[in-house]
Image (cartoon, rainbow, N blue to C red; front, side, top):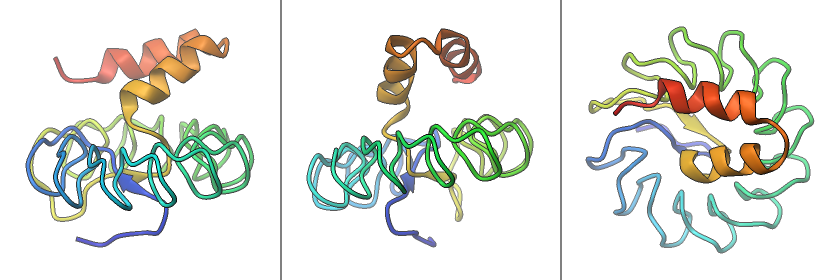
Length: 141
């Protein structure tokens, strides 16, 4: 499974390597470098490179490469590769490799955003309820 520094699996798979997996390599892992880890390199980290970081490269950064960026490659981009893209590889795509995919995948969707529920809550509390509602509507039941 390919890995990128400061990104974590963010699909909807709960098995090994998936975005909902709480073991090593999973998007909900609370250990070092995990997708739900609050320390350096983690998806819940508020410092540089973290999922909750608001500076460059962070999951809550509104500039290029950030989770709140609306341009190409950003977490709020609706075009190819974006976090709000519904096509292949996008954060809202339900097929293999997408952020809403529930099955096992060799190349799961990865992002620098914090875990989806945390990201949605952040959007709701920062006057982006429409985006939060869109993401929530695409999440599997």
